[in-house]
Length: 80
Image 1 (tube, rainbow, N blue to C red):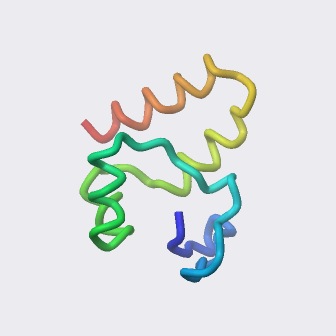
Image 2: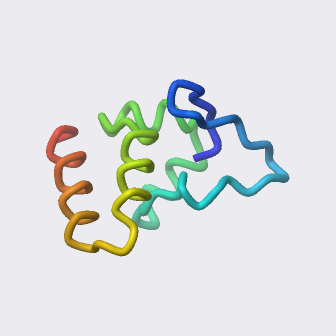
């Protein structure tokens, strides 16, 4: 995520800055292209996913693949 959301402690990341890995989200290649070719906040809004909650939840689940799978399943389930 490059977009800011200070409610979750995420500052804006400029084009020459790499966001912290804690803000990294997995995407398929099609979604990755779509996300980069549009407004990032609009992309996630269209998916019905709060990317800051998802990123922080996945970061907290680091090292626990079962928990990470459950986090993703719940987020995708809400968006469906």
